Image (cartoon, rainbow, N blue to C red; front, side):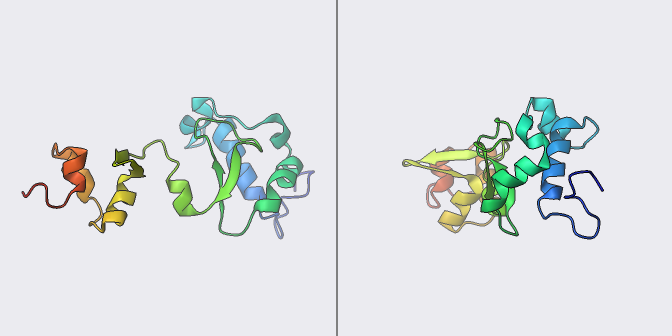
Length: 144
């Protein structure tokens, strides 16, 4: 057990694994996700190198089933940039998302499909096939 007492094998603190994974992604070059975190310059603030500070800052708003999220995907891990979100919310903050704006609304492709009650992947296929955004979002625009 580490000297801080939060990593007990029989009763680890519920946020210990979150804290450990966050640090490993940013600090351990052999970690599979390092290239997307530490390799991009994302780091953990000095205060959060101590788990006590991480728990003090983040435990009050934590609930089981939530995930640690950086509000600014290019920002560091610190109290001002982090919050707890659901899995669905976390998926919206990925660099790989394809955001589409139409008629003043901005959503990911999957959000547009859900909003328009389209089958999953239909918008991606249309855009890949060269349709404009307006054509792809309008069911009656084009027939193939």
